[in-house]
Length: 139
Image (cartoon, rainbow, N blue to C red):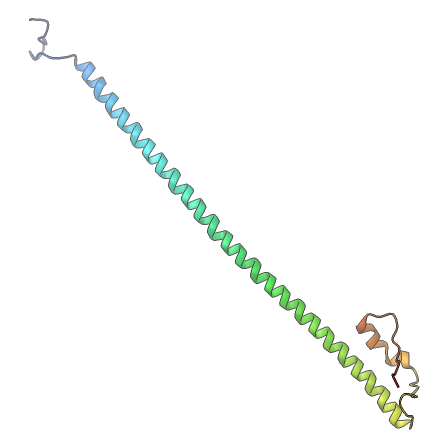
């Protein structure tokens, strides 16, 4: 039949515009699938990176907070120990003052009356944070 023959080339077949459209449609579909694959791949990699960074930093934060807690706990412990040592040294100094005065004045313990006891006991009282300091010997 004469309708099936192309006038320019003499080759029988379908419309060249339809063939180009079909190739474009298939190529466009392949491009869309490729883009979807790249998008999903980037989404998964980005999500994985976010999760890894979160877990890594969470572990570091816990380690840092534990180290900070230990540091401050040791600082508090050292401060308490230093205060106790200073208080003990202050009580020892007061006891030495009382003993030295008793020996120099020939007084017998517990009947020692230390003049200016409040002045001598001021630092001991200040370190112990008490309103008053009294000596009550047990006989």
